[in-house]
Length: 113
Length: 114
Image: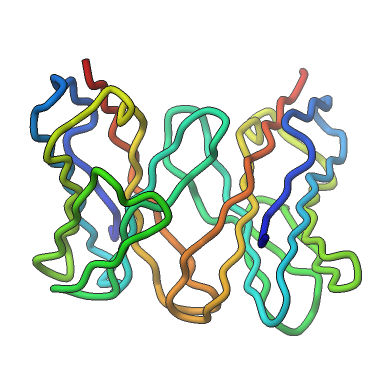
């Protein structure tokens, strides 16, 4: 069954530490996205990718890097985590049709202390 | 400023009632509109989308939405809600056919009373 999976599902990090959030999709979609979801802000786009080897900045890229080493994998990297990055992070893959229907992973809950 | 607006943060109805969740947008040109549902503790799931043709589109689980260019709206409706429809609903806009940076509204939480 095609799916988008994320790991870890929960993460506690210390301020200044490095955090890597991983996403894997078996949908064979070219497009992949990282969002964060915070109360009062809805979903906000951090980084996205239109294929292996490419990454683009979204609406709130500061403090985040992204890596797309393959069609299936898309990582979000917090080099120096801060408490303001405490959030729920969602990865999605997009099928590239009609405005790009997106398929979301279950989310990663990140707490930065 | 280009925006997607969901005017109701919270809607409560009884099971079996009809419901309409509102979405308005402020974009010019061709756009692609969609609705997603998020059950508590889960990721978003696609419900339906519109990008051309019949302005009334059908989605899963009895949901439908109607596009209105004159009103800049894409409201979601269901004739008879079930308790399992309790969730947060997000309206989203994309400006590109195949490379969709989705812009989401703030979401409407739908609560169903027994």
